[in-house]
Image (cartoon, rainbow, N blue to C red; front, side):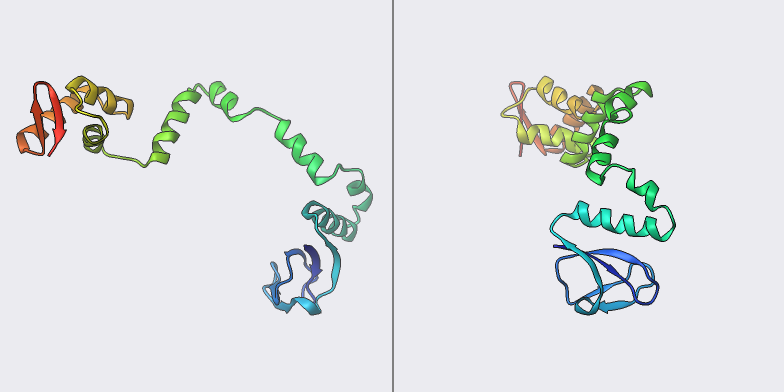
Amino acid sequence: MYSVVGCSECSNLWLVEGRPETTQCSRCGKRHQFGKLKQFVRTDDEDHAREVRASMLANRQGHGEAFAELDSFSEMEAQAEDAGMDDAEFLDRSGIDADEVEAAADRSRRGSTSKRDAVHNALDVLDRPTEDEVVAYAEERGVAPEYAERALEKMVRSGEVSESRGHYRLL
């Protein structure tokens, strides 16, 4: 349930969802008991409540007729989604590879890891990987092959990783 209510102090109008005990004016900050507030409209449709509030504000400023000519919020929202270009087209026109951006976002969602962590994770995830498999795994995560090779070699020398017949495992 959505209600359009008004502040008795500053005449601000705002939407309230549900039926809370109190609500606070978004403009002046005064706290009001919800039950004592004037409710201009109560509806289950949030868009309808938004439209009523917008219409009331337009009428206050003398723009009621212009507001009446506008489409509904849901129709304008659909038009806005269809207008302009999408993210991929924007990136392409900016000279940025959208697939690379998506790959970076995927890496970010998985959690950023250091280059060394990428090599360590390869050893943890892959079953008895070879050096080439570790390097390929790390390279998919943005680690240079030379770095992955050196990191793997250092891990073996430090005793963190063992190598047997070309296959590696964490100790």
